[in-house]
Length: 75
Image 1: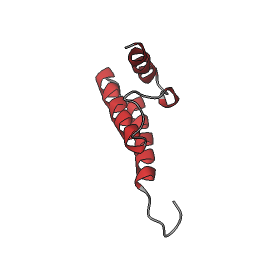
Image 2: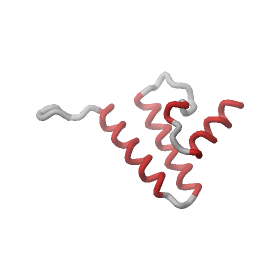
Image 3: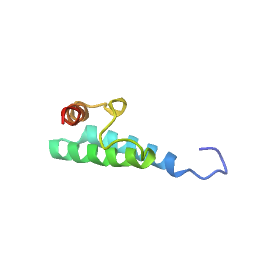
Image 4: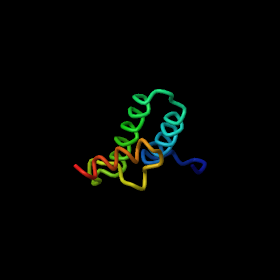
């Protein structure tokens, strides 16, 4: 962020997604990790509303995300 310019909604969402990914990595419960993945997915839809209702492979950084992406790809 440059001095004097307020952050945009897009910037906020990108920072929040990064924070959620860090929190997901720290989560010990699989259900918590899945919940974080869902939150990340919904925020990605906010910044790219034309995206189909699945996680793009470019955003899949964890094994859980990749598994969800693969399952949805076959449906």
